[in-house]
Image (tube, rainbow, N blue to C red; front, side, top):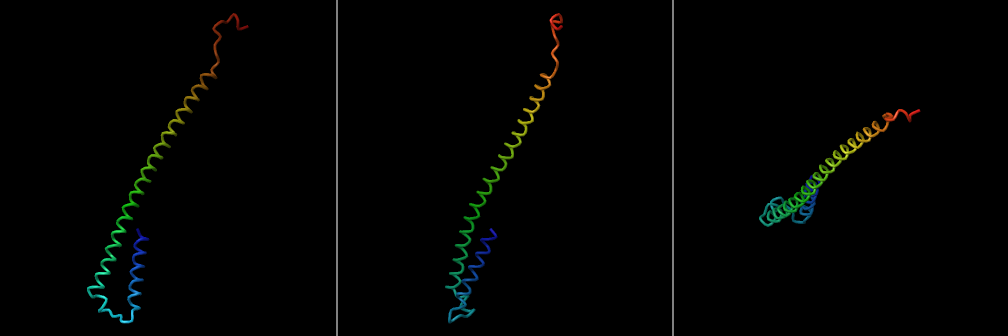
Length: 109
């Protein structure tokens, strides 16, 4: 939005410069109805275009924010699943590492 304001002011300055370069320039003629209508029409068109661009950029920003939230949620779920998998692997390893007791002592020796 700051860039649009800068471009609008730049174009307004350029328009004033071109008007100033006219051979019959006067500040009084700047405020004649025909010149004021042109200036107001230019400002109105600029506001309409700026509103449309702002609406589109805000919609895009909201969609990106939603995607970021979904990605963050998916990362949390992935970390939780990885943690659960690590706990299960640890439990399986502990059960496998326990020495098995020989139920039949006569075959042990």
